[in-house]
Length: 121
Ligand SMILES: [Zn+2]
Image 1 (cartoon, rainbow, N blue to C red):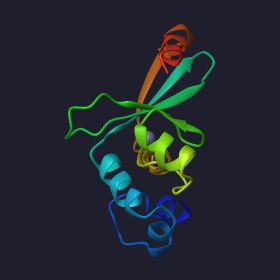
Image 2 (cartoon, rainbow, N blue to C red; image 1 turned 135 degrees about the vertical axis):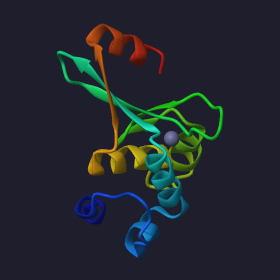
Image 3 (tube, protein in one colour; image 1 turned 90 degrees about the vertical axis):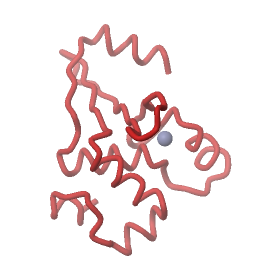
C-alpha cells in the first residue's frame, strides 16, 4: 500500500511485492478502482463507514465490504474463511487501494440509513 500511496495511482505499474502478496486479486482490484467501482458510504454524524464495491462490466449487485474484516462475496467465504488460501478478496483489496489513493466515491447517509444497510448484510 505504501507504494500505491506514494504514486497516487492505481493503474498497474507492475509491483512484484504486491503481486506476490495478493496474486491475481491485485490486478482485479486495480481494475475495479480504475473503473470507479468503490463507494465509501459514511454515516452522519457517527462517521462510521463501509465500502460498496461493484464490478461495472458485470450486472451483479454490489458487494458490501469492510476493508479489513468482511465482504459479502462468495470468494470471501470460500477462499478466505473456509480454505484460508488468500489474505483478502479483490473487493477488500479494491477498497484499501481506493482509500489509499483517494479514489473512493464518497457517499454520505444518515446513521439510520447506514443501520438499514448494515441490517441487510
Ligand atoms: Zn469480496
